[in-house]
Image (cartoon, rainbow, N blue to C red):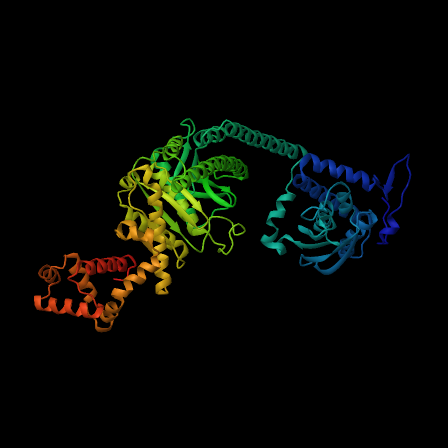
Length: 640
């Protein structure tokens, strides 16, 4: 072997032709173009996948650097080991791989410390990558990293790891690197060390083959789920069929709930797991606990116990959550594949629910149109009742007509209704309430929706099931709306009971008139109060309300009672209350005195004082009628 005392690498880079072979000094060399090497690199990536190819190229670069360091150690009589170490960057340039510029160099070979950073100019590896692929999301100069680590580790006598921090192959302006010993890197390098573990190409190919098999299996299952659920959707199958199909394809229990966490469907084949009814209930409560206080917008995995896992995906329609679909497994947690499967199923369930929702909305609009015709009484009532029967609804059973009006909200988009607030949650919450009641009590509501007003038929049968009367029902709805909107106005008008289909028009007018009374009171009293008004509380005043305006009726009552009310407020007396009892007791002085626990003389004084203030002789029948109308009007307007 020929040795040299000159440590300039350019002096030893000479070629001797021996029958077509080339030598680096006495070491035989093979010269290959970067394009050919780039094709080999591409084939490795296409065959193994980029992460597996990365490990292969890193280890290949490591061994190249290690072997060249040993070769140069023998070929050159170095003045010191530091020159030998620095020659590694020169070999990059001589080999046509890259031009290396260290920027930070802190090395002590005796102490075994190594901390170097710098940049690589014109990396052949980055160029070759971009010739075949688009920009990658992480640095891709795998050979250069491996070569630097292998060469330096051989010189240092301990492992040195290079990391590329910037790379032209991922869109950076230049390639930059940092190199330290394993000890100096600490835990920061733990994940990278796995890439340097010995593994031959057969092992790599075996791993790739198993991964391809797994991906093929995942693709098959995903395709089967999509195909089977889509077929069920086209066949108009129900959610029970959806649950069974997904459970069979995944061999896992499936649980489908609506947005109120009520059970829509669930299925589990006993061959892969035996779930009792109480376990379904546990799942239901667990999901409700985890999700009810927030909006779940993406699939999430939960651990019920140390060995019980739930994967929950929301069923979303037009940005609103309409339900949840979940799968359950014991022992092993869920991975990306199951998440993909469940999200596919959730999307198809959303289409199913959207179809059902559209059908229901269409039916609701048709019933609403029929109800509007019924209220107008311009069409034959018997014909409308018959048409309602086609929807399975019996209009001849007793019903109340309840009208809700929220002046500041609308069921329709703002663009369709001028001068309305953007929010519509109270009316939306009311509609959701009726949806829940229909499901829970197995009943149906007929609704007429007009902008900020909703009129609903409430059957007496539903109230019996719910075990409340119409007044309590109205109060429950009022509390629900107030909870959503806090301070804005809400009017609720409740009609008398409708026992005959011919009465619906009259009862509808009663509910509307009750709301008008509330509005008139707010205008006249200069107040803004939400109210519930029941037509049966208006008594015979409803007859007058049909013929007179509420404002005029209230003004009429003020003529008799305004001064008396003012006197009571100023003197803390009960003259209006006394007058009410006196009229109700048909002007019987003794009966009124007993009911109010007042002496006869005291009662005579009160009646005399009342007649003086209002200027009316209560012994006359006409006067008593006028006072009775006035008192009832005050009661309707909540002025007593």
